[in-house]
Length: 518
Image 1 (cartoon, rainbow, N blue to C red):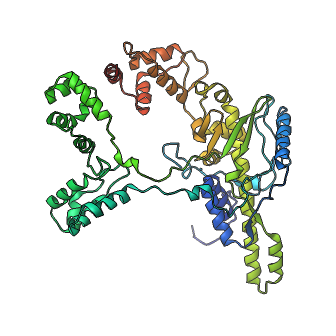
Image 2: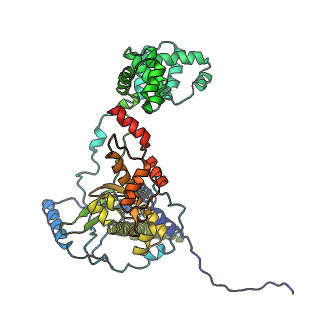
Image 3: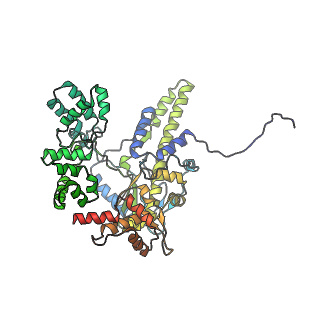
């Protein structure tokens, strides 16, 4: 058969990842802080984007707010319908983390996500029972001047541990070489006050022997606070006991065998230290009064509080009110007037194309932010609907749930739900939880009834152990029997896995601890 070139027409389907679609998908999984930074960057790059400044509050606004809230509460007693008139989202709407189900970046792309930009969504009825969601249409600010310095910026800064040690180094150490060694040693100290580096490396860097470094370290370990610049816990506690003049040979032997103290093996410690059990008990009390992390007495980085993305509040007439946290969301507008002015003055086709591209980019960003807000709200609303019993009665009633359940209920792809719930937090009457917290695996019922959430079973195990008596410590097998009698089908290895994950020791260790404490 002769080979010859020819033309053929074929029709196929493929997902084209346009830059706009990539941006919309990226915005879904950003935290509020990341979103603000992203929007700030876009505002700097796009002359047609600007921040939307809210109108200053007028006198009597508080009364109007109270009236608005009262009218909303009365309207919330009837079933709500989501439509574009009732659910107005601000021009711009709105957090990856440890072992909270990292499945955002590797998840398949949502094949239907681009379609949500093509037309307005149809009205959605949340259910015949009660009203689960109400969207606030406006974002209110309480600040009087955006340029005013915040109160947190006027706070004095605590001196750090390294600064405190360097101040002492300059006073107590005269030799220049020892000072250089001390600076390198202090530079390796961690937040708890322990040396995290290698002394041999310091000696090579400075060009001196290890003995010189050790001698300098012994001087540094006399600095305040006692126990600082230790290499391990035993050395840290020994320095504090030396300061109290309580470091005798028996106590040093005690510190060399702290693993026996962790196991509450007082008889073994008494034998090694050549003292009786009563002395061991007193020595253990002295050690427990010491500070195992002296460095934490000094200033450290301020821990940022968790800011919820969604608020869930009970309605007076029943059901739940769900709203986005608008205070943390960027609010931007497209300046079409400025576009019209400069577009008329554009002289070349290249300038007009640039302005048109900037306008399309600005419009798409605002539309993507609005869609992001609606998507987060829809997912949060369905989460509240599915976990209503948890919000009312507590963790014992947390239902097993997965991404597929939410995705099918709101007609979205699982990857979209995964991105929406990644690093987002929801504030409920029972506390602030990651959205991923509500997705738990299921444990079957021993009688064939409704399955139990793994998180509620873990809570039940902890509750049983917390309430056990010293003379009736529960073994894993006993816990299995109790849970089976409560219609929970669970194996002994599963109980042991849950117990270890919660860092609860075995029944033998717990019995020994209770006897030592009693």
